[in-house]
Length: 487
Image (cartoon, rainbow, N blue to C red; front, top):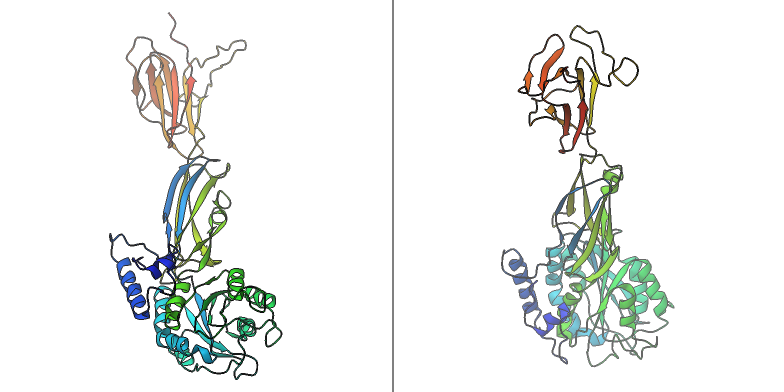
């Protein structure tokens, strides 16, 4: 929706309040036109419009982290202008003074429901009415929750003004019964849009009090939008001098997470209802599937755990991604997060869960293993003595070695380099056997193949350095010692 320079629209967005009795949009038709214009604008890139379509940003996160490492991502959740999967029940005071207000809603109810369904296609609706003790009906559900807009409109069209008697009416009775009689779906955002011009008896027709009514509504998880109407007859739906001793509409709306939107005159009721539906509080939280998907190697936390914003606004979370110390080095983990609105998974217009996909690469921090193992001569015998004991030189006199290189992820290369020059051999395979000769002053060489099982005869100026490099560019070097030739 685009926020135009109109006092009533500004009131909807929370920027200003309308002045006196002038609610800005006297014609619901004009409000509907503005809404349609807003929807069209949202489809146009680069218009600068405030976009209220639900979204999770960023849609993907990719990071490279070491075992035990972490990173922080700022995540924003743009909530829908209408809360998700709404069940909306219109509850009307149909006493004699409400004729003009009833006519206004009857003329515009289909437009309101179509607007809601355009934003939330799985929305459903119902209609109910109340009067007072001795009236017929004192309370009635005219249409239970249904996706059929025409059926709800037909029910609303049956409303006729009548009865009432004394000033207070039977809304506490009606709200209590409607909490269980409307047929709300178990997984919906439950909303009662209640409008009237008078406060309610306390206790009410069935002995209901303000406290018991609030308890019934909150137990059922219902949010109430109250629309006080000024008809010149009732004492006011939100009259602080009610029989409860407080403003009943404000108490009920506040306790249920709803709100009070004053309609002013009867012709403004539909606009006020629309304002309320697009201005409800939404509880926003985040959920992550990373812990389960990765066996606990990737975990995610969010701060704050939950926050409440006005529908259409943005909730901002600080997401911390943690890699366990035991995560598999060199591996890539993929998992996802999603947002919850009023405890329900946030979806797109097609009903698909809106996800943030996380790709975490765990760095390899373990260097490779390199070993020079004394081995047999080309014929397979004679492992020459080495060490520091009697008869041992501490070196391999014949220079026969097996080259070993291994890594927790993968080995990239195994080479032998000359400590006395810049020379390095061609790559070897793990387990290759070589003959190493130290020849100071000679030109280093790598002669392949050697005799028998010997892959190469290496002639070096200095000591042989076995260098093993893994695929993360980590390097381990060890010496393969042979004695220099006698002088």
